Image 1 (cartoon, helix red, strand yellow):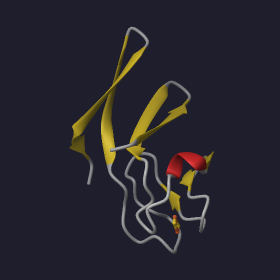
Image 2: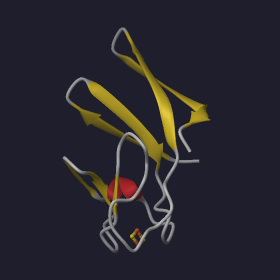
Image 3: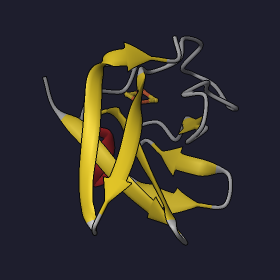
Length: 82
Ligand code: FES
Protein backbone atom coordinates (compact mmCIF):
# COMPACT_ATOMS: atom_id res chain seq x y z
CA UNK A 1 0.00 0.00 0.00
CA UNK A 2 1.32 3.42 -0.92
CA UNK A 3 0.12 6.65 0.65
CA UNK A 4 0.47 10.21 -0.55
CA UNK A 5 0.83 12.92 2.11
CA UNK A 6 -0.29 16.44 1.28
CA UNK A 7 0.48 19.39 3.52
CA UNK A 8 -2.09 22.17 3.44
CA UNK A 9 -1.07 24.90 5.88
CA UNK A 10 -1.01 23.28 9.33
CA UNK A 11 -2.94 20.24 8.15
CA UNK A 12 -1.62 17.04 6.63
CA UNK A 13 -3.83 14.77 4.54
CA UNK A 14 -3.13 11.11 3.78
CA UNK A 15 -4.70 9.48 0.75
CA UNK A 16 -4.19 6.24 -1.09
CA UNK A 17 -1.51 6.87 -3.68
CA UNK A 18 -3.51 5.29 -6.48
CA UNK A 19 -6.01 6.99 -8.74
CA UNK A 20 -9.39 5.24 -8.72
CA UNK A 21 -9.66 5.56 -12.50
CA UNK A 22 -6.61 3.75 -13.81
CA UNK A 23 -4.37 2.96 -10.84
CA UNK A 24 -1.57 5.43 -11.50
CA UNK A 25 0.25 7.24 -8.72
CA UNK A 26 -1.51 10.37 -7.42
CA UNK A 27 1.71 11.58 -5.80
CA UNK A 28 2.95 12.51 -9.27
CA UNK A 29 0.01 14.87 -9.71
CA UNK A 30 -0.48 18.53 -8.84
CA UNK A 31 -2.00 19.92 -5.64
CA UNK A 32 -4.35 22.88 -5.81
CA UNK A 33 -7.05 24.43 -3.62
CA UNK A 34 -9.49 21.90 -5.11
CA UNK A 35 -7.41 18.85 -4.14
CA UNK A 36 -4.90 16.58 -5.79
CA UNK A 37 -5.12 16.27 -9.55
CA UNK A 38 -4.25 13.03 -11.30
CA UNK A 39 -1.47 13.62 -13.82
CA UNK A 40 -2.84 11.17 -16.40
CA UNK A 41 -6.43 12.27 -17.12
CA UNK A 42 -6.93 15.20 -14.75
CA UNK A 43 -9.49 13.98 -12.21
CA UNK A 44 -9.20 16.03 -9.03
CA UNK A 45 -9.68 14.33 -5.62
CA UNK A 46 -10.84 16.18 -2.50
CA UNK A 47 -8.21 16.02 0.25
CA UNK A 48 -10.83 15.57 2.99
CA UNK A 49 -13.15 13.04 1.39
CA UNK A 50 -11.17 11.49 -1.44
CA UNK A 51 -14.12 12.06 -3.77
CA UNK A 52 -13.38 13.10 -7.35
CA UNK A 53 -14.77 16.46 -8.43
CA UNK A 54 -14.15 15.88 -12.10
CA UNK A 55 -14.27 13.02 -14.58
CA UNK A 56 -13.15 10.54 -15.72
CA UNK A 57 -12.75 9.12 -12.17
CA UNK A 58 -16.10 8.43 -10.49
CA UNK A 59 -14.99 6.52 -7.37
CA UNK A 60 -13.26 8.06 -4.34
CA UNK A 61 -9.79 7.16 -3.14
CA UNK A 62 -9.25 6.10 0.48
CA UNK A 63 -8.44 8.86 2.94
CA UNK A 64 -6.67 7.94 6.19
CA UNK A 65 -6.73 9.47 9.66
CA UNK A 66 -3.69 11.63 10.41
CA UNK A 67 -2.34 12.65 13.82
CA UNK A 68 0.56 15.06 14.27
CA UNK A 69 2.44 14.76 17.58
CA UNK A 70 5.58 16.75 18.35
CA UNK A 71 6.11 17.36 14.64
CA UNK A 72 5.85 13.70 13.68
CA UNK A 73 3.08 12.58 11.34
CA UNK A 74 1.22 9.38 12.19
CA UNK A 75 -1.15 7.80 9.68
CA UNK A 76 -3.71 5.25 10.82
CA UNK A 77 -4.15 3.03 7.77
CA UNK A 78 -6.96 1.13 9.47
CA UNK A 79 -9.27 4.16 9.46
CA UNK A 80 -10.59 5.49 6.19
CA UNK A 81 -13.37 7.87 5.32
CA UNK A 82 -14.62 5.65 2.53
S1 FES B 1 -5.78 7.64 -14.32
FE1 FES B 1 -6.33 9.20 -12.96
S2 FES B 1 -7.96 10.22 -13.95
FE2 FES B 1 -7.43 8.60 -15.29
